[in-house]
Image (tube, rainbow, N blue to C red):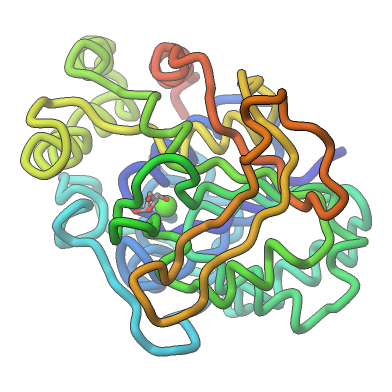
Length: 318
Ligand code: BDR
Ligand code: CA
């Protein structure tokens, strides 16, 4: 049976991704590892435990990973995700604690124990995955697939004009991960900024009235505040991490996802953290490229928020 390891910086949309996955009994989450990003790595682990406990899945191990990138210039995002990193709702502090095993070591151990049967879903900066690759150079042979929420190819960045936040927070790690030679699917802003959750969806969640949907409806308040103020001028928000989760488990088939040569700008100019994918073939149906290393999801069909809300409303309560 396949095991999914979710590496995240929980985070509002990370929490939605976890709840989406937990609502599918066919998906086995072997562990959740956390990284700095939306909040610090410890808080991300506590937030993850809060979400797992809400879903009745405190049995899933949670492990803390990288506290910073290797340059020591992490950018956290309380203006997006609230001062507690999770929308400042009334979700209680966790009753359980993170595991003592560091994230990268846990990723390597699970991959060695289940060769060829582990899938990675990375929805934060890629520091833990890069560290795991340094610990175990054979990791690309042990892991079946890597799905990453990150990057901006034809879409502007969100952290800077050129760079998306997850990649911008550790461009060197992202380069290591994209160049590792394992099968990678990248889900950049090009796709996620088209999948927008709205106030109608929020109302459906509130009306359903289960603990999970009450939490998701209330956490969306903080997310909509940010998107209304800084992005759209309207109360709707991008489903970044849940979309990547749905693609990772095969629930969403991308509309346009060429396999192309992709790298990260690790310079210190204005392009730092930009994902540079060779999409010059876009007018010719993306002919095959010799050096192609990443499947880049450029478009999905923009109906995913309905699926997400259906899943959250239908999930059995613990
Ligand atoms: C990505 O950055 C994080 O803030 C979100 O959780 C998502 O993974 C979007 O750029
Ligand atoms: Ca995230």
